[in-house]
View 1 (cartoon, rainbow, N blue to C red):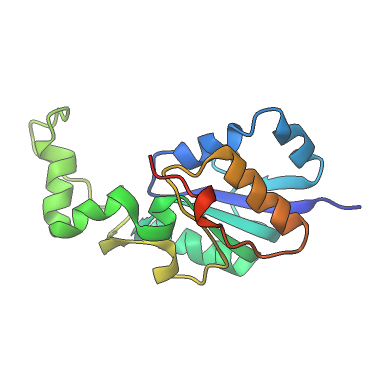
View 2 (view 1 turned 90 degrees about the vertical axis):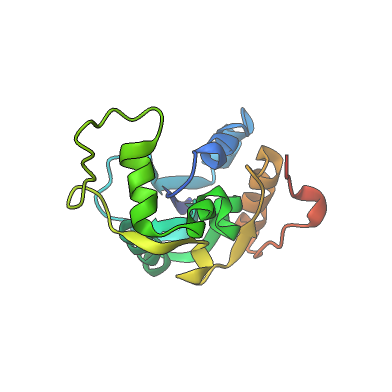
Amino acid sequence: MSKVKVATVWLEACAGCHMSFLDIDERIVELLEKIEIVYSPIVDGKKIPKATVGVIDGALGNDEEAHLAKEMRKQCDIIVAWGDCAVFGGINCMRNFSDRECALKEAYVDSPSTVNPEGVIPREDIPHLLPKAIPVDYEVDVDVYVPGCPPDADTILWVFQELLEGRIPKVPSEKMRYD
């Protein structure tokens, strides 16, 4: 029996959701007997391949992230929005209270840890910011929502088990994590 192909992307987020996936611990060995990760943040893939399940972690904050979400939707049969940033926009939406120029100035000039005496804000070297940071489903259709910051390992494993059984899971409230 062939393995279910899974692609994952990590967009505007902290990596906590992918770390929760690794927190499945030794149960990941059994899961990897049934799935094949064909694309992820830790591979040097140039193109998202066809996959049954596409996991999107993170909000959409720039045109590159929006493009990646659209590519995932094209290439994957089922899209899973993983974590509060992907589901709701998360902390990334804090920048929505100011305009793009203000956000760029804060990031590249005014932040306490920035050393940029010339006050240069890169333009061509970085993806163009969207007007606002947005959840994934503002740009593409999402089939499965897995909220949490981050979702816990047991919930992530449960979602994969449901998908492997051919069911589109709806995460019950008792499996959601907000801490």
